[in-house]
Image (cartoon, rainbow, N blue to C red; front, side):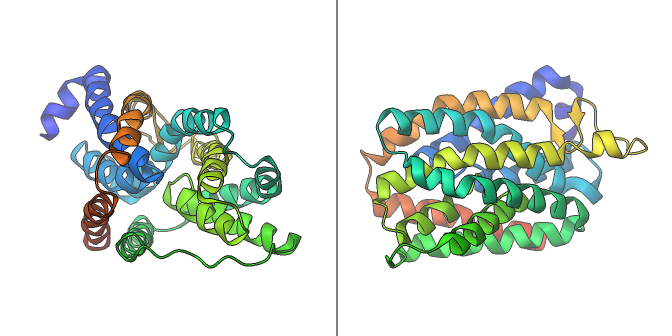
Length: 273
């Protein structure tokens, strides 16, 4: 498998990552959950097969996941906006702290040991899996003040960039507590996934500029692996529509349980690798 991946070069890899994007776009469309929860463990596995430096394996997977999320998040946000399900006031309130948090989270990820970062991702993934299984809905509270929104936005951005997701699993529950209906909460979270992915990706690209002695894999900028970003972005942009269709035609409870099972396995893999 390893020789097959390497011998085919960037074009062969592009096809592989295109298929990965097709697969990960489906759960993203079905559950409104960023593909990073699926992408990062798979990328860790693939990058290990390709012989990437084990010290920075998880950072490469997370940075690449964020880079691939940018165009997918843009398409998703546009669709929600056209349907009137993006709350502009909420997006404007969360945007500044989310940008700050995303840059802090990505910077922290670069400093953390790769194995420790993988365990953090695994714990988060298992937590999301349990949330899906139990269908926990956050309580609705009166609208919080500016400090709460700033703290929430900073935390959402930091955690999202730290583990390579668009933040919908965190932003949506917070907006639900502030009285938004589920459609507007999901649409607004999709819009806020764009600045999270862009800000985080820029920080993950920094090692290419700041550490001139670091030997990065070919076709990469810092911790962003370009063939993976291109292939996954195109594949996910196509299959996310299929995920939306499935969400409206298959039993929701069964889908949630199946996806939770996948996340549990991926989380355990990240903890034990």
